[in-house]
Image 1 (cartoon, rainbow, N blue to C red):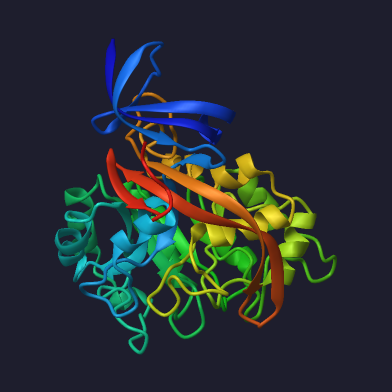
Image 2 (image 1 turned 180 degrees about the vertical axis):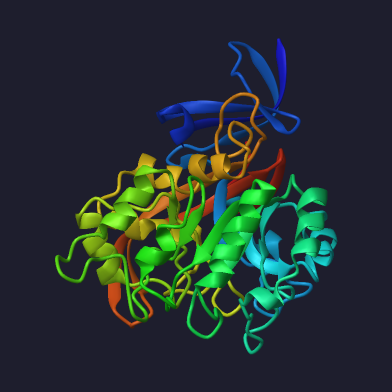
Length: 381
């Protein structure tokens, strides 16, 4: 008789990493998913009848340096929304990354990986703006940190926007440094400084183009002459550049999104861009599954949509097979959701409304084999 710590029974399991979509049971021993034995004895059993059972969600673009940044959210607030892992999108720079790592990455239950802001102080507050200019960069400090924290730092973050970037020399320098260090680049494109062709053409396989559906400033992803998605975007996707929706409040336009997906240009990753002024608040970025429902409403199949918040970000984090899946051997990160029929209003930066008809409500979240959240009316047997 195999002894198990927990069994989740009767739930509708969707695991894009394995192509699994159907009723299945999940077994947990310690902090790992294990094969479901024929005969077993479980310490606790969770009846997930009528619910979806997903891998713990991954929010690939958040700001969680709460101890050192006024724009950030405490990372463990994510657990109650079904998110068990996240990537901090460059809140800290070389001046304060070690403070971020010790105060936030190490003690948090949520798994955290990071992009390192090219500006030394990172994003410290709403009224303190980064300056992306080559003379402001500190390459030696960046090199030292990347070497020391290579397991955590995924790449360098730069915002190529009016008011924070001075010129394209800043991006070229960032790309050169990332290439030297063998790491990625995440580029913010809202209110672009130059036509977006110039930005996306520089990106390499695995680099992140975030806020793909923004429509603020001089350019967006469409060719103004044809109304079609720019050839530069299609070429970038073909060579492996990752397009992240990175919703936020100011960086998403529903009409841009509708037109892009009508042309088959879906996001590779859906993330929240959680900041302290909007986390847990609708109608912008209440939580990650709240955002995902927009893509479901637009016709994205559930398994594809779930991949944007599980298996794809897991791969980009270098944790494929460890998180973002319910495969045996993976960490026991599990999110259980009930879905109800409910009209929900979303807004974009322009105030344009969009209505969805489903709402995903977290029932239970297991993080690294621990029960991190449970709704009052969702009981253990």
